[in-house]
Image (cartoon, rainbow, N blue to C red; front, side):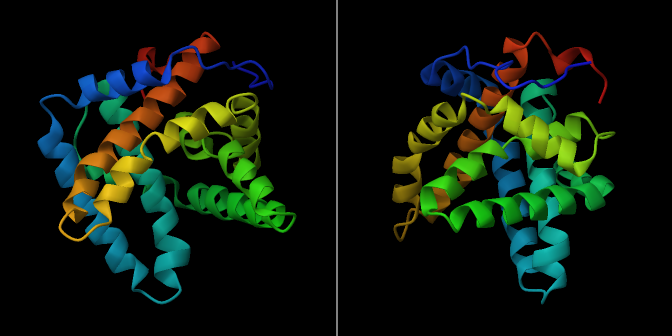
Length: 210
């Protein structure tokens, strides 16, 4: 069993290589991921309009579901829309991971905005780790994410910045539909980053049945 010690994980692939892996994974399969993004946007939008229950209790498992969808898409080649809702199988822990991480990020943000951003990247892998290790506690998922991101936060931050042009273009009138392409590309590249970190520590979930 992996101990998720700080410094155990190191990004081994260049950003361009991770984006290339993402594009290759998406080649010929855009139709299903675009459909998944449409469903996700519509469902989260509807949940967001439900007072209290939607934002607090429904959105976190949907966020976990989005991670599950793209993880299984990249790792196993699956594109079933129902994977978007698998977060509800772990609704309690998804709520715990989301809201506890948000609390930590908020507390760090009180010092200044930069510590808050650093904290958000420290806990950025917690949902994926929770899915891959459903037996662990919420606090352990956060601890493992923090350990995994030790020395890798800036790498992921720069990777995210490389999508800024896509997202800026997509906010202009007439270009909103661009999110349906840039969103999956961004998500799959983040999954490729996570998988690269796992492989750098000598672990590969592709051999597991999840």
